[in-house]
Amino acid sequence: MEFTMRLRKIPSRTKNDEIIATNNKSSKKRKKSSSFVCRRCVCSGFQTSVFDFPPVWSEFRKKSQLCDGLVKCEDGTEFKIHRAILAAVSPYFKALFTNSINRDQKEANEARISIPADMFQIVLDYAYTGSCNITKSNVKDLLKYADQYQILDVVQLCCNFLMDELCPANCLEILKFASQYFCKDLIEKGKLYIRHNFPRLLKDSYEFYNIPSHHLEAILKDDELNVKTEETVFDAVKMWICYSPLKRKVHLSNLVKCIRLGTLTYDSVLEISRWHLIDENAECKEYLQDVLAVLGGLNQDDDVDYIHNYLFRPRIPFTVVFAVGGWSAGSPTNFLETYDSRADKWLFSCDTDSSPRAYHGLCNLNGLIYMIGGFDGNEYFNTVKCFDPVHHKWSERSCMYYPRCYVSVVVHHGKIYAMGGYNGRTRMNSAEKYDPEKNQWELIPPMQKQRSDASAGTVQDKIYIVGGFNGQEVMNSAEVYDTVTRQWSFISQMNSARSGVSLVSFHNTLYAIGGFNGYTRLASGEKYTPDVSDGWTSISDMLTPRSNFATVILDDYIFVIGGFNDRFVSGSTTINYVEYFDTESNEWFDAASMNVSRSALSACVVHGLPNAKEYTYLRASISPLGPGADCGNNR
Image (cartoon, rainbow, N blue to C red):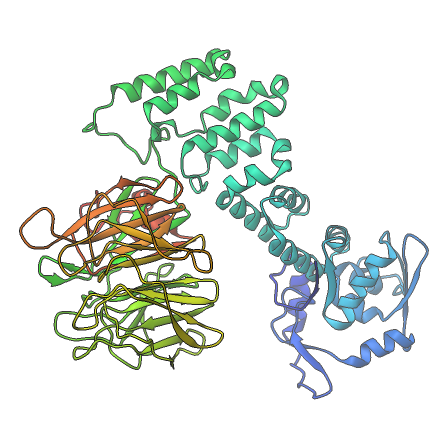
């Protein structure tokens, strides 16, 4: 893989930079010339003005004209250069050529360097053009020599290249390399990548087996380590120890104490304690017996300090669920709850929007949460609100062409699609899409059927919508929109008519779950794989029948949240029950219930929030008065 790396502003790194920056404050900004290629300068990390790389520089270099210096590489290759240009990108060459160290000596015009000619050629490319060709095969050597000779912007470009190349197979190796050259940004990005991709790293990285014990211990202790269960942490310890058990078993006790065993069941911890290397280690064996004694003596009502007791302290999840609005106790709400999957707890958030809303759409695009359309009991909205979970701020976005409640919303290729719904007078077949960069909505071809209370999902380049209500009947029809041809067409009908249904796309298969068939709320679900299935096939029933509920994909499970239910009391009622579906085992399992019973809510997930802790159970350890402070009773 090969890239031509371009200029960008980087932070200063040396005292020489600061000296140069001070000198430049008095210099005037040059006017942009039409014959120059104008780019943002990164030749010096301090620079904030526009710097020009005139094509004539490359011409002088190519023809060896006006050269006033000579650089000799370790293999004997000589390069005629312009000292001022090379000094501009390197404090080392500036000091060398100007004799700023030995001021009583004449300025030097010749330098001998221990850089291979092919590496120095790339450095010169950057000095004269502001860009250089960085590849997988040259990036490590180039970074090493650029660091040695203080060509700081090339160092930064190499770091940026390696950041883009991070993957589970190479992240540990890149982190080790970055640490040798004190590349702070790359080190932080590498550590973050390791935390967030740890399970994949265990499968793909051979370098994991060579990681030093203290580095492994630091990784396993991290609150942000992205593991579904602490059994994954035990597996990591086991893999690392077993790679060289005679040498590494001395580290077993410290590593086992990194496992948050209190978050596991008694039986799981008992199974871990039976591993022969633990059984043979007196300190480990005693520690596990103490843990088992604590777990065995716990009652459900025991008061445990889950935040400050490391044994029970949950990790911070990589993915946070946001559930917004809905209908509760006979009126719309503006409640915002977040779900901490590692603690299996729902928490109120203070980040509520000012206006209650139900039957709206909700989606995550580029880390921002968009709330689309909806109904407040009086008004049908065409408005769009955007929530920034990093800065805890709501803002307005451009309105849709039409008011829409009971709207179906999906994200596809960086655009938001809003389809169908009810405008207060009629069920609609119109559809539109939103471009966040332009902050504009655009009408797209209408659906073939009028649909409100339907649900949509995406597979590859197509958008699917199923079920709904057309004003007279509950529907079982389904259709697909081809985003390339911009045409709607019908696909196989569902086995059951469903209004208030949820359609979920997971692993290129569509799952239509729950809903109302005109007589009762449904627990049933069915699935369809485009271009593979002949029709819809049944999946296992939910534990609780429901319609008008929220769904998200979390930890490779399908979660269903809240909704209407008519099984427990006469008529329908809102519920707070949450359950999740394992598509591999075709089974449903209970999860913690929300704090508030509600239907007509919407939910979405946000991945990799830098402030995820503020929306999780561990937020109490930040500040009781800070962002995400407790706004009510939390389950």
